Amino acid sequence: MYIYWFKEIPSTQEFLYALTKNDDSLPILVLTLKQTKGIGSRGNKWQSPQEGIYFSFALHTSQLPNDLPIQSSSIYFGWLFLQKLRECNKHVWLKWPNDLYIQDTKAKIGKIGGIMTQATKQCLICGMGINVFDSNYASLYQEQHEENTLKVLYEILSFLGLHVKLDEILQQEYVKIKLTQSSYNTDVFTYISWQHVFTQYQQEFYKSHSFTTHITCNNVLQEIKLSDCLLCEDGSLMKDNKKFYSLR
Image (cartoon, rainbow, N blue to C red; front, top):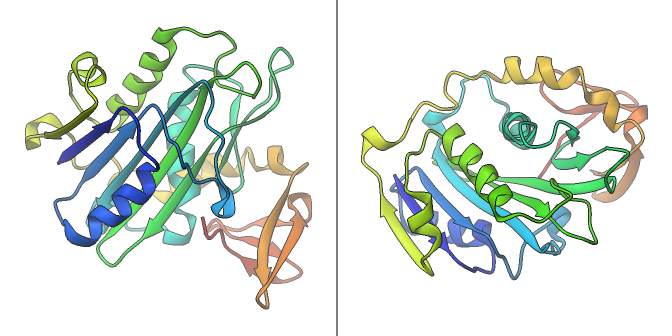
């Protein structure tokens, strides 16, 4: 496995997508604390906060659970990483299909992050951006402390089963690390089934009811109320007897 650390990069997702076209050394993780051209929902530019964490990772399809609907990968990964973020702030939740929100009367209520997934022939790429702190936008923490960013990073890396010297990495402008198999867990997601994730996420889908989402119907982009939709077992939405999938 390889880890790429950049002090600053236009987009971890675009870098990794280009890298996987010519490099099959999976898995790969790309990590940064500053993006200059981050990608948000539907290809929109993501406004970087004062403190943020951005990462993308690529896994071979054999490292995914057998029952995972690829079109619902954002829900799958979003829910799993959400559990780690809740150790930092219990008020974070996942809006269908790929937005992380915070809802706390003491905080700015709004979007604090998002998940983006892309599938290729041999792998799946998942990218995630998190607002750790910003005085003007909703964020995971309401106060600015360097240790908050470190805590979130450790939560992410530990969940991915990675054992690295984070303090040494963060001091560098750019680092490429090759990990031996004993330094990471290749089966992090293999044994966490989609059904297990869906059963839990389904219980919180109601939190999305006050929001809308965009779908494409007959090549026309439409905005629909999530309260008018039924969440199906494959992660899709059902409205007027028609199924719609997340393409993010």
